[in-house]
Length: 347
Ligand code: NAD
Image (cartoon, rainbow, N blue to C red):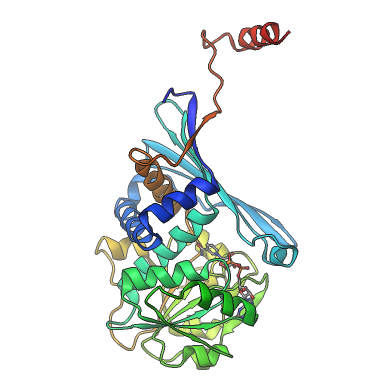
C-alpha cells in the first residue's frame, strides 16, 4: 500500500477479525504481546495519559513510542452515557512509524480496548492469583464483563464465574452472552453472594464517585482482586481499608496514583510495578494468604501492543480498507499547487 494510504479497521472489520480468530485466541495473543512489551518497558516513552475532565466524564489521549513505532488512543469514560443508549467507553487509535512520522494504521478501539483490558487483567492474574483459583466473582456486568470472563477462562483456567450487577438486566445479558463458553455461570443477588467461594474478584463497575463495591469484611485472605472500574480521579471501587491490607500491583505508578484505587492512599504508599514482576525483578504472589490487588487503570503501552497486534494481523487478513488520509503532492513542497490543480480539475 502506498505510504499516503492508511489501512483503516472499522468496527465492522474489527468484529470480522475477532470472529475469524476467535475472541479467546485474540485475548491470549494480546496478553503475549502485552507481556513482550512490558518486558522491554524501559525502551518506551512513558507519560500519564492526558485527561480532560468534565462533571459527567473524561476524554483522554494515551501516547507512547518504542522508538520505531508511535501509537496513541483516544478514549472516553462517561458512566451516565448508557442511560441515553450510548456506551460508557469508546475509543479509536493510530499507529505510526517513527522514521517518517506517517501513520500505518487507524483503527476502532472500543472493541479492542475491551479485549486488551481483559487480556491485561488475566495476564496480571496469572502472576498474582492464588494457585488453583478456578472461581471468579464478576461485579459489574456491563460492556467489559464478558471479555473479562473469557480472558480469565482462556488465560488463567477460571471455570466458574459468579455474576452480580446492581441492574439485573445487565447480569441477565452477560449470562446469556456467555452461554456455550464452557464457564459455569451463577447469577447472584448481592456482591456478598457473588464472592462466595471465589478466590478471584473482578470489579468492573462504572460510577463517577468514590464507590465501595467491595468493603473490607468481604475480602478474606488469599484473594486476588482485579479492580478495573476505578480509573479516574474521584472514581474508585474499593474501600480504603482493603488497600491497606493488600499487596498492590500497578501498571505505571505516576498515572495510577492519579487515577487508580491508590489515589486514596499516601503518595509514597508502596506499590509494585507489573513489568518488574514480568521480568522477574519483583515478586508476584508471595504466599497463599496474601491479598493481591491489580489496580488496573489501562496504560498506553497496552494499547500500543494491541495496535501492533492488529497491524500484524493485517499482513495476512483482509479486514481493513484503504483510507486517503495523508496529502501526497507530486512535489512534496507543492501542497498548495496540488489544491489548485484539484480545483482546476473540478471546475
Ligand atoms: P458499563 O457502563 O457498560 O458497565 C458498568 C456496569 O456496572 C453497569 O452494568 C452498571 O449497572 C454496573 N454498576 C454500576 N454501579 C454498580 C455497583 N455499585 N455494583 C454493581 N454493579 C454496578 O461500563 P464498561 O464499559 O463495562 O466499563 C466498566 C468500567 O471499567 C468503567 O468504569 C470503565 O471506565 C472501566 N474501564 C477500565 C479499563 C481499564 O483499563 N482499567 C478499561 C475499560 C473500561
